[in-house]
Structure formats: C-alpha cells, structure tokens
Length: 333
Image (cartoon, rainbow, N blue to C red; front, side, top):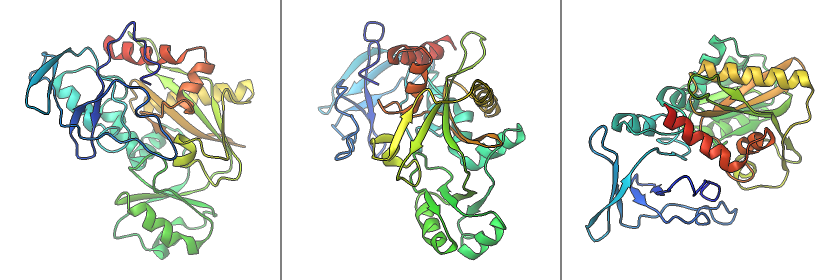
C-alpha cells in the first residue's frame, strides 16, 4: 500500500505497532514490510514513541525519540489503520481514534467488532435474511468431540473448525471424519475461547468488494473475483498472503450476468446488515441454490495478490485511486 498511495496528494507518516503494543515511528520504506514466504516482517521497537493528540480537536502528531527529545510531525488529517486481527480489526483501535476525534478510514467500532466475531456476524446476517453456512458455536469447557458431534447432528462431513475471532484463516482446520475433530478443536481453541464448527459447503469461492458511498451516496459493490484451488484443502494463510502453490485468484470471475447481479446485491445486503462503513470484502460460496455468505472482512488484504484491490481494479479503478477513495471517504465524514 505504501508503494501505491498517491504521494502528490498525501504526505505519509508511517506508524508501526509492535507486538508489545508500542506505537513507533517507522521508516517510510515501502519495501520494508513486503510479505515474503521466507521472512514475515515484524515491527521492531526502535525506541521511538508516537504521542497521539491528547485533546479532542487537536490533531498534532508528535514523536518522542530514543534520546527523549520530542518532535512535531505535523497535523493529522486522517489515519489509515492497515491492521489485521485483535486490537486492529475488532473495533478497538477504531474506538481509540473516535475518542481522540481523529478521522480514520475503514470500518467503525460496531461493524469491525461484529465482523471480527464470526458468531455475531452470522447472527446479524441471519437476522437480515442473508443465508449463511449451517453450524454451531462451541465455547471452551463445552468442547469435547462427542458433544460437538451430537450438536452437529446429521450435518455431513467435511466440517470446518475455526476460531471465532482470529482471521486470516489462522487456526482453521478441515475435518473429514470424527477422528480428526479433537485435534481441530485443539488448534482452534489455541487461538480463541469460542469456536465455530460449520458444515462444509460445496460451491465456488467468490468474493466481492464493497465501498461505502460518500456524501449520502449508496454503497457500491465491485465485480466478483474467484478463488480457484488446486491441490490445496482450503484458502489458508499461505494461499492468502504468501502466494502459495495451488491458489489462483481470478478477477473478474467467469459468471453469468444473473450470478453477478445476485452476488453484488447480496454483498450490499450483508454490508448493510452489519452497519458497514468504509469498506468490506464479502466472501461467498456460490452453490447450486445461489450465493451463501461465508464472512465479511472489514480490513481485507491489500497485497498485490489480494482479492479486494484486484476486484476494484477489474471494476475500473487503479490501485492508487482505491486508496485515495478510502481516505476521501474518511475525510468526508
């Protein structure tokens, strides 16, 4: 994203977040955080500390250097929170910026929190009449395989076992038979104390990007893209972010006009159901009976192989225009 942002319009101040939770001033080096299968980048603690504005309405960003000196970095117009997982994608950082009255791009507190928790996301979608996969929610303490199997009843294998609040396919397992369930539950509960067990759905994996409208305009949906798997059980972390073998991202997808209309309309219904803001990637299974929503992602991947930018590029935007659209939408609020 640092490569693509329009530097003639925007002055970028890169802020990193360490694993320990420290906000640090980062190098404005687009190559520094390129995803590489041999080395996943990580923000190091370089001794600096970002000092966020202390009072509502005051937007000067400051940095305390490692030697203790403090420098002004200038006023902030908008924050672009490109963060995945807990504290970045779950409404936490969004609430922090709301408290400081700092404009930010992307989802708000509510839609971020709802979509980060797959259980409540399914509750919201079901209440809005948006079809979702059949399954159950299992909490720690009620997680023995026999009781889970009883609750799943006659739902046929394969099943998918996934943490409710992890994301990026971390902790997800495909279960082909009852003997694999214990291990799948162990892997999922290592990431979260609430887990979904869902019936596997036979259908094409299709994704649609949604952007919030500006100045009262309705949200709009991109052309759909498709995840085509060959020799890979499911679309896992490696396939999503590292370009692993056996995954092809096809955009636009080869679909009929009626299928495209149905997918785009359902993507907008799903976005409205969670009170969506900013953007979302809506992931579908396109079955013989029509589309079924798997999940919404309120801060989808923005790597060169990611579906969300590919969908909008196929719909007529450039990558820099897409990033500018996210920023302009935040500013227009």
